[in-house]
Image (cartoon, rainbow, N blue to C red; front, side, top):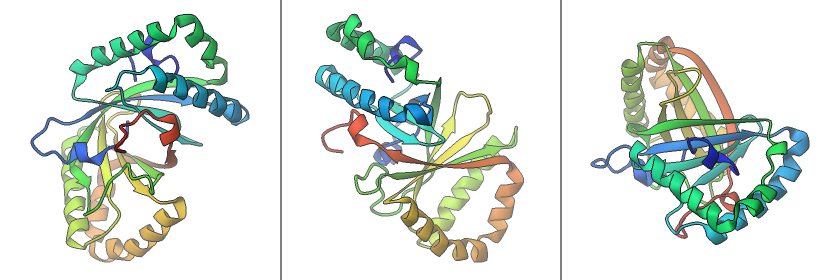
Length: 255
């Protein structure tokens, strides 16, 4: 996170579901910046991140927001919501202004580039129609810090058909009153496109798997044809677990 302003800023995943639920609003874009840290460096990186977060909170503009997630496979992800790509340069100017206030020498002193093995930055768009938000769903709920990230790789040329089948899944879950909700995101940039990411929150990993097992019987019994249809459109699938890190995030006081 410490050097994202020197790149074309940051992208993913993934927070307030309320933004995706605004039917009349333009889709929310996300800049998601990722840092991969070797296990041996995680403790030092966490300590540095905590200090850097406090520095940012003390100097950030009132409207600056980013959401942090971390996981053994996903690394540290910093997701920034945007009204559109036109907002990108504005955010970049915000970061530059903040660092000027802090002082570049102090900022560089607190940076921990030597602890980071790899960095990446990509853009995503929330897919409101492909997201399932049952009553009471809030992806950023404090009591649901667990996140399941499902990476779905549609076959090339089948993006539109795949998005349509995701809408069918939303209708299926709603019809059967299933509780596991998710928010869908379309990757705009990346090395292996097309890609759709579904993010499902839960109180814990065990809570996620228990609910998944309970609902699996319904999916297999009533949704077998839809499942087969979906699999025919996919060229790949990955599942990764992560945790929402509010203490390393810059979020509104209402969150």
